[in-house]
Image (tube, rainbow, N blue to C red; front, side, top):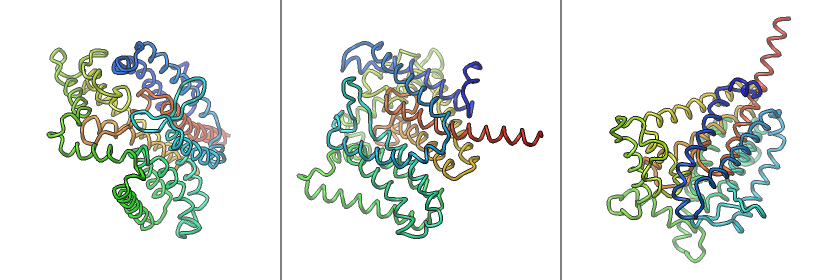
Length: 395
């Protein structure tokens, strides 16, 4: 590990946590793909091999990005933003549907798919961060400062909203957080929240009044998940996913052989074969069943340490763009992990957010590592600046 870390710049703790999670994801994905083997065929080795390729690509992307000057991310942010819009529009009309949601784009010839929203999340964070710096003296002005910064958030969230409500809401919240950090007047932020709620209600009313327009094709799914969660005792079949997730977590706590501390053991989970996407959306439930409360606590601690190190890098940055981007990435990673845990424990309704760095998923894994590579590039810049300052002081 020490030899490897010599070639990795930036924050060593982030590198260690990332490498640990990527390595463990190989073990957990191999164990959690029972449901895929049952429904789609193949063997666990097939999915393990595919996941290993994605990990290699993800680590390669992180390594390549972390050696770049962060100023290039700002310069390319506008191009990335418009590319994200193009991908989202393409997905809207020509996306491959999985579980009635058209979120995926199929790559020709290779047969692989990726979620355009994964790229759009990062593109929006970077572009809005750039605009906040560019418009920082005009943020009190609605036309010249506020709307130019806010419109990219509304466009990206609006395009994601139709097929991925939870991601759109999370991304909208992250956008508001970045606006707050960028010292956008609080009353303007509150008016944006109020306007967003009013617009959402208006679209829902239109959908209800004119169902033939099919404005929100997944509205009934969202409504059922919320209502079933509220009345779960009377909706046993509809709540089967949540109930199995809760049972998996309970299973991880009752093992008599080890006092319920370390779960059923890797590969010994019983509920993972009945949890849809046990390797992604219900990752935490499968993890608790096999690893138990102790390692679940360690997992949460690792995410919190990761967030702390990212925030520390952001707050130590010597320019606002680096600060906004870094904090935005940190909040994005923690929010995805938190939602996955809250869904699995039954606090939130079922929604599709996987565990960063652990769950199986190509575009999500690659984008997460790319984002961490940006954080490490900023940390590396600080490291080099500190080294130059020490040389000057010694002279």
